[in-house]
Length: 112
Length: 114
Image 1 (cartoon, rainbow over the protein chains, first blue to last red):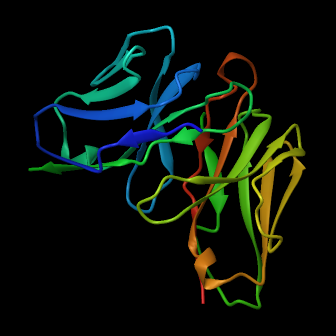
Image 2 (image 1 turned 60 degrees about the horizontal axis):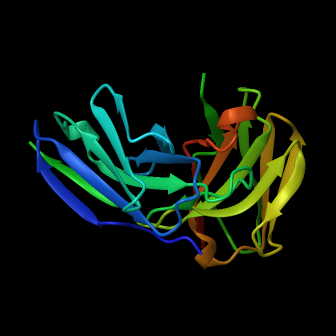
């Protein structure tokens, strides 16, 4: 089955860029997603990328997709303390099955 | 409006209690989901309703009973739960068409079973 790995923890200083990485074993997902989860809250959809794209930019967020290496990343420019949260990548290996495969989650801590 | 609402926000119940979690969306989405999330872990899928019919049951114990009264509402009925069922319960919904795979999540219900 699909396996999606993320590094557990990332710490950056306020104002720096953050890069959160995701590697996966199955490359059949049509869309790949990034979600943010603050403590005690639900998952907030941040952005997503269609599998035939290499890059998508949305304000401070840049998503890079390297299908050859099965690698997805989320770059947050000018990271703020409000960006501190857990970030999950997710994909749907078979479209229309309703089944997300989530990454293990990366806890981002932003230091003032 | 991409809002999914859930009530209650917090719930504490004993192992003999019966309670229900509620989820609502008014985005016209036709698929709705229940997830269970333990601390520091990704959400685990429990149930999916598509067009108000149960589409997926991920071998969830019968003490959890989902219900979809209409296309906007999703309930999760709880009975005789165990302490290990304590978790954050998340509801999600997704639209039709090209973005049918894109799920929008509610804020969750924090459940504690004593």
